[in-house]
Structures are given as structure tokens and as C-alpha cells.
Length: 429
Image (cartoon, rainbow, N blue to C red; front, side, top):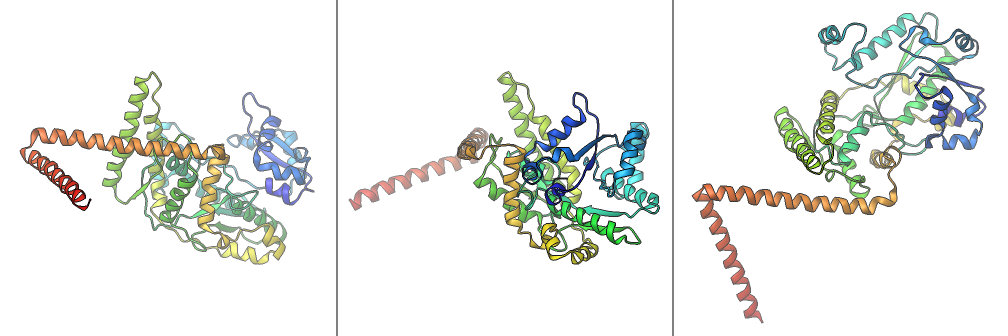
């Protein structure tokens, strides 16, 4: 919607389906969208943008989307192109047409080799669209893992924690310290503005050229400009060194594990144990414990993502490249979806910066204090490890003669070395 108004300010109206929400009118919900930073540039080229948006009360879970007869007639009379972008982004949603107990039992049989209900229902949706399309001209766009914007309306814009964004936040705050992933697996990330540009270009091509069959466009980066998870992780952590997040739980540091045993070990040592200790501290200080619940939710998310971050796929981009060749040079510039031009290191740095600025709404002026906070966390970490080592060593000395002998040898050696050093210094003088 933002890109349409920015590039085509003469558009008469855009209809959007808005689900009713308690305590808010449709107009208030639209105003909330338009009032975000995302629409700042649009208001410069199209000051009356709010007059060109017609909100229709709808619920996609109901028959005919629960659209009134009057609104339905208006849509049928004045709509030229439809973009259907509504979807759930939860990987573990239930298949809801039966009782939960029955659904839980039959879901594994239904989805088969698919990792979750998300991919299964996506495939079902495409099948229904193609079977029920009749004489309508349709196209299907399959974006891979959608991330922050690359260029438009500005680099790094993101407003949700879906996909890799949640992992970036978890790593930056110090919650995520270990992840089971294959470093060389392709991180098939695609910027949101590339998806938008391709979607609009597909809408134009489908309406004007009217292909005889439903074309499928893969909006992916893996084949044309691959970036692996290892490279992405290194750049994310390097960026957090320069622009850390505020009030981090621990210093940003995340390692890859490649098997279940080491994953379970690090989950216990680096995730669950610190969360339990911190919650114990919160209880002692009279506050409500929350870290264990947060950590369990993070680990659940990681388990759902493991299937995707340990594999690489190859997607045909034939239709996408064909479409690019059909655009004029000017349209290729305005609706650029050529992922080969993307510089991954620059993009990831802007992505992390966007998470800080637009998602977490942290002030850049707070970076020096955030760096000082990380230094304090580092010192606490060193002191804690030193104390833990001394306690363990003391317990070992109390129980083992061999350990006591080793300890006395180390102390004696250090004393003799220092004595020799002092004597050498005296002779030089």
C-alpha cells in the first residue's frame, strides 16, 4: 500500500479488508497504520492519502469474509486488481475444523513429511486457488524468509519479530547463546521491499498480458545471491559490537551446534540455567519471575526453526527473471526486485540497526551507555566464572590429595618465579 501510493499518487482508491477490533473503529485502525514512520514519505507526495483508503469490515474466517452486501457490491463494481496477502505466520497453528484432541491426533498424518501446519496450509491454499479460479487471471508469489527492507522506503525498516528478526533481538539482548543450525546452509532471506516490488510487477503483468496458466514466481535469494547462516551470524554479532541494544541480559554471543547432544547441553547451561538463576534473584528482590517463561518460548521457537536453518533449497527463478526482462528500464529501477544487486554485509548491518530504531524504538544517543552496560556484564561474567572456579577447586582440594599436591606445586612455583623476578630486577639496578 505504501509503495502504491508513493509511486502512483493518482490512484483513486485502495480497498483494504480490516478485521473489527474491540475498542477501535476501522478508521482508527487505518489511522494507526498511516501514522507509522513507514508512511512519512508517502505523505510528502500524496498528502491526502487517508482519503484514498477505504476500509472494509471483514473477517477471513467467516463465509464471504463477513462483508456486508453493500460493501460487497462496491468491491465488485470498482475493484480492478486484488492482492491477497493475509496469512497466519505462526508455524504451530492448529487445523481448527475439529476438536483440538482430534486435530492433534490427525495433524501428523495430514502434513506427512512437511515440518509444520504452516507449510501444509500454504500448499492447500495454492491448490484451492488454482482449482477454484475459473476464468480469473491469477498469479502466485512465493517469498522465502522475509526480512527488513533493503532500500525502500528506507533501509532496515521492520515492525515485527517474525522470522530472523526474533533471533536477532534474542541474540542482541543476550538471551540466545547457542542455536542448532548448519553454518553453510543458505539463509534464503529476502528483503520486504523486494517482495513488494515483485508483487506489484506481477499484478501489472498478470492484468495486462493475461497468461493462459497460473504462473508461480519464486521471490528468493538462494540461487541468485546466496548468503549462509554462518556469514549472517558473524555480521549480526559484529554489528552489535558497534551498536548494542539497551539493557541486555548478557553480552551478545551465539554459537552454532550441529547435533542434538551438544544442543541439549548448551540449552541447559546457557539458556535454562541462567534463566532459573535470574528468576531466583527476582523472587529474592520481591519481583515477579519472568525469565524462565521467556526462555522456554525462545527455545520453542528455535525448535520450530531448526528444520529450515539446517537445510538448503533450490528454487527456480525463471518466471521472476522473465518478468524482469518485460519491464522497461525505468520500471526496473522503480520496482527493483533484482536480488543480485544486494550487498549482504551492508543489508544485515542495516537490518540490525532497523531492529534497534524501528522495532525496539531505542535512541541512538543511548549507544555509549549500552556499551558501558556490556562492559559491566563482561566484568560480572569474569568475576562469576572466577568465583565458580575457586569454589570448585576448593572443594576438590578438600577431597583429593592429588589436587592438594598440584595446588601446592602451583603456589610454590609462582612464589619462586616472583622471587626470581624480584632478584633479577635488583641485580639490573
